[in-house]
View 1 (spheres, helix red, strand yellow):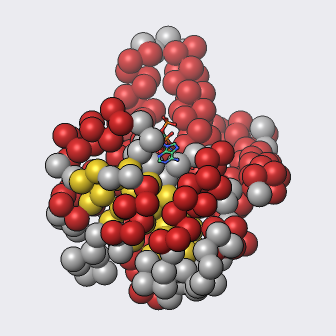
View 2: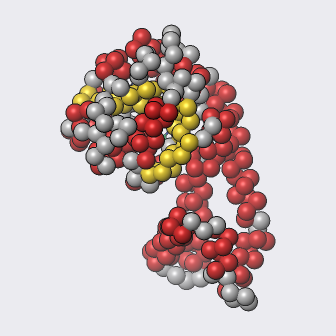
Length: 273
Ligand SMILES: NC(=O)c1ccc[n+]([C@@H]2O[C@H](COP(=O)([O-])OP(=O)(O)OC[C@H]3O[C@@H](n4cnc5c(N)ncnc54)[C@H](OP(=O)(O)O)[C@@H]3O)[C@@H](O)[C@H]2O)c1
């Protein structure tokens, strides 16, 4: 239990912080009095306090009190926040950042001594407890710091460890991925509407097909191509549909989407520092 008796503080109490608090409390990993949040917006802070029964304080009090602080503000304000809390950096603190495009080295550079920093790239399905998060370590973070971060993000879905050099790729895959999936679903729904199916029915069938297919990959552990072959009868309907997708070069298009988004992520990160 890496989070047992740990105080967890959120700096920035927006959508992501709310999703993570929901996951942590829902999984019983921490009790409300051990969770602290600081937000520049008083009304937001009060809302979170009322909703979860957690504690609120200013940024420096949270950084000085918590065992683990989660940086959950937008990239534009991260430098100001780090300057503010820098005096509270200490080797026994675990700093976890979900700020898109900000490297562990950049965060470490604000502190005088060695402070363990863990960087995480979550995605929006965290808001419904089905996130995909990639976690990487900074130069001072230990196995124990990583275990704490993994425990927190597994409370809102799946979490895996990657090298920091892969964070732009992760951003182009799972970070931007929900938008790709939404667009694919939209295309299928319109395809069925075009043939006369009602939009409501098309939506139910499309969404459940995507959810069910994802669950099959997860639960069987089989390669997606094997599962595809299993539903592809020679001369049947599925191979006719697959031929259309292949003609449109679907797989190379999806590979290109990941590469384009990763490239954009790398350029944006370079501009933020
Ligand atoms: N949402 C996602 O799916 C997702 C996915 C991956 C990564 N991320 C990253 O996660 C971070 C948080 O995202 P979010 O969607 O939760 O953003 P958000 O909803 O805008 O939350 C940020 C909160 O921090 C507050 N804030 C601003 N400056 C502050 C300061 N100096 N001290 C304390 N609080 C301050 C903001 O208040 P105001 O609104 O009044 O400014 C806001 O309530 C971002 O860096 C984003 O890149 C998000």
